[in-house]
Length: 91
Image (cartoon, rainbow, N blue to C red):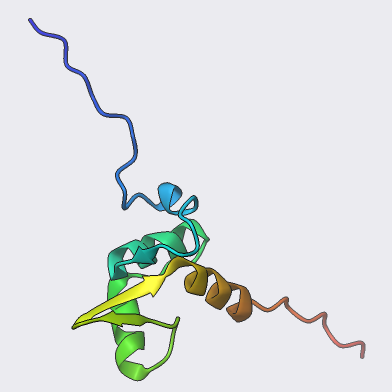
């Protein structure tokens, strides 16, 4: 019987690994989704595609026909999209 070894390193698209990506890295739609999930937002790749068609959501870059997201832009978009909740008004 042979010993089986498993690769315990997280794949490149694992959400936790996305948090360590540098700001100047470009991410595919799936990778952008993973980064947003790691930041606490449940955003699927299909949602990013829909936002792209609606011209909303995070900024994108184009490489030919490919759409990619700059990691720094995703982080800035999340920071600008999150607002603290306002305290209830005194009655």
